[in-house]
Image (cartoon, rainbow, N blue to C red; front, side, top):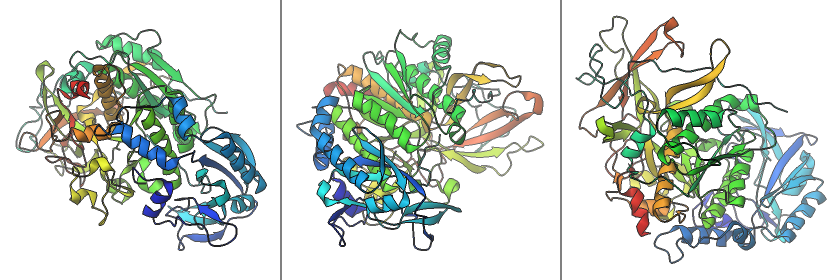
Length: 633
């Protein structure tokens, strides 16, 4: 949906009629509830009437259009309302659903034969058979083939009675395709240990691979062992700021059982400030679900990275981790809503997502409502832009990731970072890696420069209209990459992401003998970039006396073209760049040999980091002066 439009206007942008249904009692269509993949050619016929449906009916609140307008006004530095945020209670009173609306929606659902199983201030949950769901939402449910599997979905856009007067925002769950993020039940133990092999560079270029073949006509350095907070703070201009008095929330699925001890051990080993009592807190669900399907143990490392990266950059900031019960959108949304409803933090780091093609507009609408409610409270959401470049190698289709594609979040792209001797910033490229292995005789790189392996997500959305803050900044060639209408382009800002110039983390892992103990390794991805930017924003908020920055994109783009950003390009030294990397074949030790490769930098699929705004790094990465610039706003 467009950043400043109410739901029904957004429906028009999606090509869904916003008018009342023509047959039967007057009804309002619920935009985007028929998935794009539910096509006539994929239709396998009606779903059995007795099949069960579990759905969430999201509430639009009292003034959906007013919510969008207010969220824009308080976030725009050029608005007279900039920074005039509401408390969580004020936001709910002004824009939330009334008790009368909840009661009316509940009565309607019950009258159709659905069972109401719960409700929050955001939604009502129901279960029932297909026949009852079809009656309630004015559509038939059919079976459709998607990706070789068969899923249920509405045969036409769902609707709600017009008598409810727009109380329903959308409904999710009518289609039963998985709506989950990537990266009863009991949480599993930590994943198997992973080690990086040497040789390493302690800082970029400190150890040159003199015995290995040249790349791009010169000897290349070994990959860094893993940057620490001291190096990242220097690279992004932290100065004396520490984030004191600011709270950063982190959302992921599940929760690492060893996060407190791992974070404390890591901080002690690398010169980060010791955690004060209560500085790291967790808000967790009563139980977890889908742990095997979601790979729960893999999320432990995500939480560990996020917590340690935020603390490394903003060592005095408070951190609250809000874990979701699973990796599904519904549970992740619940975590985000906990933060908004209780205003648990002003800055929220989110290192998860999925491809845009998997996100249906109904779920996107539910996310956007949460982001807008956060914006009017002064809460900013930061999402990693993805680790597969333009997604062609991963999915066969050029597309962006979601929720990073939302017009109401800050999408964080990725770079390869060179921090030199004395913690001096040297340069950054857009993160995009080509990998070639060492030949058997050790004299050349096989098929140099090699195949694409990973890179920062970016590009142009096919579903989200261009938000106001990108106008005049994003080149038309990018904004109109998918047609004549300008669309949302990702990312907005960027930071270190390349695992070959990555960050060192410490985590309890499972060793080959079955024991579990603390160990360290180098890691990257835009899962690193998002908490780094969240940490930088905490520093900036401290510098403005603790006053919330809120939804940051209008302010980020307002500073475009200034010296407050490193304008990241793919060849910052004027030539191609690469590093040498050595890995254990078994991921742990040299028992099964070593794998040596060359990793080219600044080669992100079809995406290019160029002078000015680009779809790898956005406006660039924070430079010295960025943090203190917020004092003036």
